[in-house]
Amino acid sequence: MDQQRQKIRKLDNSYTRQRERDFQHAQAAASIRRRRKKRACLIMAVFMFFALIFAVQIVRAKVNYASVNVQITKQEKRAKKVQATHKRLTAEVSQLNDKNYVEQLIRDRYYYTKPGETVYSFPNQAPKDVNDDDQ
Image (cartoon, rainbow, N blue to C red; front, side):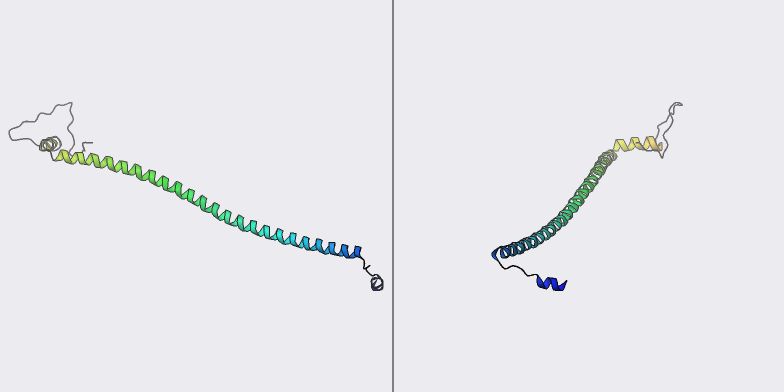
């Protein structure tokens, strides 16, 4: 076979030279296409990587935002309860500063009487226990 290859020679004319240039040009173009394709794939991979990172960040931010909104709602409810309790206790303190109210409270709860006063209890009215609250 080596002898046959040695016997075959390329023709050196303008047609074969043109075909050789066209073939080399096609190979160079194919090589450039492969490099460009690799480069495009690499750029797309980098882009997709950063897009994925940004998407994860956005999802985390939305989850944190929802969590904060839930906490805000809970704290607002708690604040309303505390304000209602504060308002009730403020009213109670102002009542305890009233001498007539305190006197009536002591008489009802602890069965105190003024000197010379007589207390009558009726059978259908149960007396309040000393430990009961007015609430």
